[in-house]
Length: 452
Image (cartoon, rainbow, N blue to C red; front, side):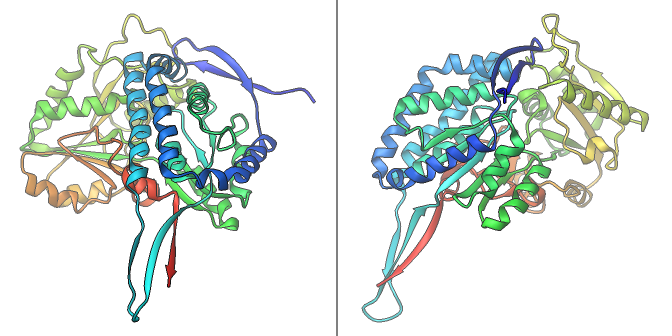
């Protein structure tokens, strides 16, 4: 039987960078078995020993920062400057968990009976299957792998076939830092068969996945037979609210920064921009001024399918009454076939597909609202519940709205809400569990109660 390969495409040039082995169920099963065999030795290492290895990994990632950014740029299409920011963000998780593992303690206390004590201790859950997306090929890996390794869990990583080269380099540097090959495995190729191996194996105790709702539900269903723990981040459709007392220049600038992150291909991207009707025209003017001179460098969409989908949804919106209020010019140096020039769409309503679905592209979809009661109802009118943003000078009123909308991450006068020390995760179809911070570390443990 001939060996299979798949190509990694550079979205900037639409040319193949390289070919990689097309792995599947067999290779994934081998990695799972190796991880399970070495689990005991890895978890028995003192936390300081694991911390030292992870800190060495952090230093190697830092040394290779430029190289990693160039890899991210080539396979995802991001400008190198933006890729450098992602690499730094990714590495912050490695640094944080190399330190946080040393601050983890159990607890003990007298029990209700005389001369009795009890202890709560945390034990690593076991082999973890980590499945990561293409849109943040470095950060989504370290956000999962660093806490898992710190906790004492072996990991089998399946990166996206769109962006495996970043994962390969990160993996290579982890091994160089001293992580045993069996403890951190990497498999890519046949996504369906690799996923099947991960969900069906009783040796895999947890799946951490970032991706679509459909795949997340599939993982939940197929993991039921082995009762795996699941941490799922399944996308979003973020409302972004501009109140009538907001600083319009600040709102326009922060919304543009959030929307242009990875050319709009982010689950936290501000998708549904609700503007109070009394300031609608002024805000649109501020937003046009903010984005009109192409000061924001963005890359192309990930592939032709993404470009075709975006074009179709814009055409569909216009046919249903939407209007293009402004469209950026295509930069002279931008030659990619999958580049999508950012645009502002108005005259939209909540029933349009562009408002109901998560749109992975640099489209500013503008809606107006009259009062807070209406706003809250419309903001919550989505199957998702990941991120939301509020722009206002009235903190008390804004906090009331924040407490009334069903989203896991809420930014007030800010759209860049993620960092290594804070939690990330959503409500409803946006997923289960949390990543980041101490809660993100604790996902990789089981609690054990001992009484004596």
